[in-house]
Image 1 (cartoon, rainbow, N blue to C red):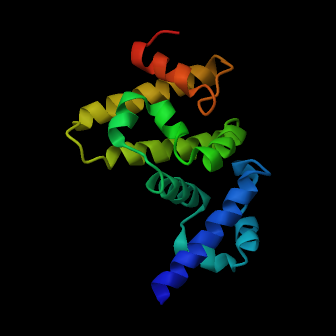
Image 2 (tube, helix red, strand yellow):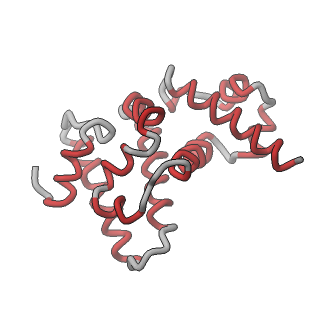
Length: 166
């Protein structure tokens, strides 16, 4: 029974969190708001998550798990693969949060965790180079004020990822 109760509570937190993400930036969302939205006490939130970054990571991981995500595809075209994770629900939310630096930091941590947990034949060095190329593209967009949004322009960014050319 406790397992079902924990699952139910997590789902309520995920739903409340997702709803908040459609209305305000990740960096402005507080634990109290998440708890209120999920109709739980703040301490219950901390029973399941360390902080809102942990919540973001677990939420994204649950969305990845519920999708047709394939690591082989991810290594070949990472931006498109991310965009296909629960495309109808998650992609608009990711697009809305793209300008929030805290959200991008949390999202990139999710990418790192996903790549490093991969059990394929990729070497550790291959994984770090993969992560580095994704980070380089995101830094290029951010630091040179490119108008690309990784959650909208994913096909184009996969071309940049493959070729290293604009």
